[in-house]
Image (cartoon, rainbow, N blue to C red; front, side, top):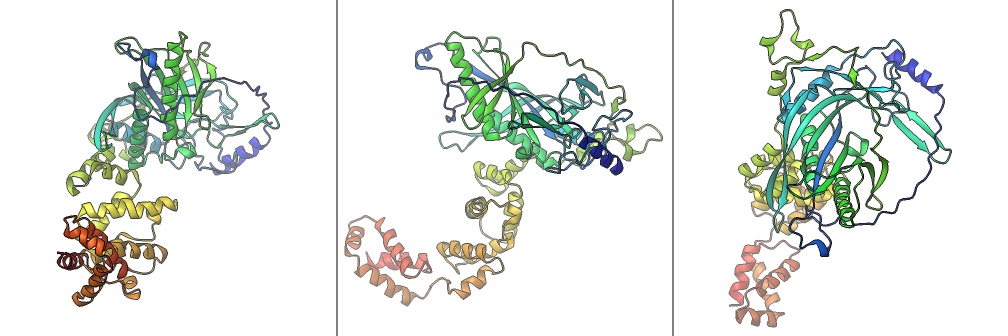
Length: 548
């Protein structure tokens, strides 16, 4: 196969560049703000008195690149940002006489994803040819699963944070119509300066799972939450890395508006959105645009649109009135894909290693994000929003639980250190959890020093910063080197407190007049004198006695 890849690459070098003319067309579309967190688009003032407002209806089509070392029907490797046309087999280039060989890993990934999304797994599925003619599709057709996909009728449960403080968890469901295996196309690189298009076939033939979601959502926020939940599930399963910036997760949004109880309106399709944030903005903009069109007495066109992240608008690409006939037909070079329920159902003489057994995959399913969030809240008593933060960051749950195992500090106190101090530093320096210079055991040691009264909370944060700058030093070593231990000498604290009381007679008078909150100011001044090393319990007791 390596030889065929090299030979195909040499052949592709001789393929002539394909020139295209790209006439530029200007469109005037009114900008509408989409910064509001409200799900339902707001109507103009004159229409607010209407008994039923127009609401958005959103369905999604998601292409997830399967996490596999080779392509769906060939042995060519899969690697992002490889030199153009360096990962192309004879089959990927559609040379005559080449035949597809199905990648077992891709089938297992699709089955695992279907099980995680509560789908019915079809024990028999079929492959089809979908014909269309693009320069980056050498065969002139894509192998997909139109008639009988590998998984159908699933449900994705996702969560939103709602309420005035956005700390109430609201669970919603979206129906998964089907999951199908299919090939990816190549990539067209447009050179506007020279008016030409260059073709890179490295991506051609890479395995995809297309997940079709029914129009069960009503706004960009819901769609973004559903896609984020799906992304976390795929990453937990290991079936897709879900890196949207590298095109591993691409989203098309089908958007329409209607009045509740009436038929759905004409939909538009917003293509190839590669960011969850942009997805929410694109959908909310498109909903508002369609409402404005209908309120002005216009008609929404059935068309494909693209989202411009700079202007925050969706722009027309092409209409769907003259859609070509894809001429779906059975793939003649691939037999039906047969899956087996368990080892007992295998025909005599069949090696279990050569087939896909659904029960075996089901037994290997990991803990899914929703289950993990519920477990964190129930086991450790943390807030729901904290569980979202932990699960959303790869590796942060493991880090949090590793710290808890090594310290006696309460989980509610540890969570603040992990989500504020640690995660704040990681975000600031664009680092992942696994790149943290402070290990869970090192953070646990620091928290133990604070918990046992050896250092104050302010000093603990100071030591944390020093540990970040000097990964080789432990919390105890830094505390000793900089003499940061808690001052518990009662006589010394009495002297410092008396000095503060004598120099702030107005504050003392306010405390004696009943304003007890002023005592906190005096405590802060004592901590300033001791550089944050004074025992706060002792300081409060001494100051209360001296100001009584």
